[in-house]
Length: 418
Image (tube, rainbow, N blue to C red):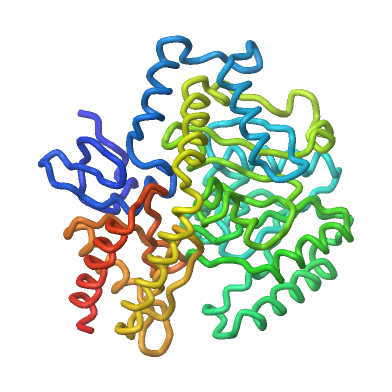
């Protein structure tokens, strides 16, 4: 009898029968508030009728048309639609299946376009599990342990994670930029550096937002040294942060944007966007893949964009995000075990720490597990897995946020005794 790999540890005990909106229903009929959204994937909620119809209709027409062999209408239409929401100047797209593939495509493009070998990533960033992407990931050693030697040419600079350092944000930002300059002097000369890869909000690294001063500092250094600024919007894009792109909060223009997750409401689709001029510098044959730009996934992505726009989900994410962040902070104010609550839009993390400020993984895990038993599905993140994250679908309502906060408040009180 075949079984799933024992390494696939389940975050919750739920076996799902079906999903609807913000809810998952298990095989016993119990309803669960899903504040995981498939790790930020089901942006329009589970089985949004418009997305389902689009996928069903496409399945009856064409399931797969390999896009370096033939073109198909959903691929062309999606590309046109994305042109209306992509950052200014990014008018060329390459599609793949997963976030890791998008990261590797951007890495390949960056090195080929600049003819430089090195890339800089930032402490706590998550970019994927394939070898190159894992080599660029510093949100936890579990993603790269045991597969070394890792890819050469990756250098790590600090991210302004103020709570970790015990500083205010301005101090942490000045430190991060100063250390980036020091890295250029000691490890990777600017003329050897192809790109900097950065998340607008650290995802697996603990739901830590960047800030305008930091992002402007990256842009200025990229311009000064001819380095490409690659913004990883895999988790933060498509309205998740309360603006269409996470970097919109910081008024910065990227050279390459990475997309996936919420793009197609659960269907596998990812991509990179750059200018035509930059994309043309990649080597012939360096982009491709069997399933990239799958017809059904593209149809679902078109429908997803329509739902986001027609139902004002970016605005909803901003409003519900403020409600969720404020409510989680009220709970934290009563709970010494929660050292900080932070986030942007519908990315909210509560970091658990001990009385002396050390990571409190055990309490975070206990709270997450207790929440799942009480009908609220959550995940943990951070290098120590001591941050409980809330990442509900963008269709979440005020009443559903209130329900989640009620459960969360009860769970935290019971687990911490506060």
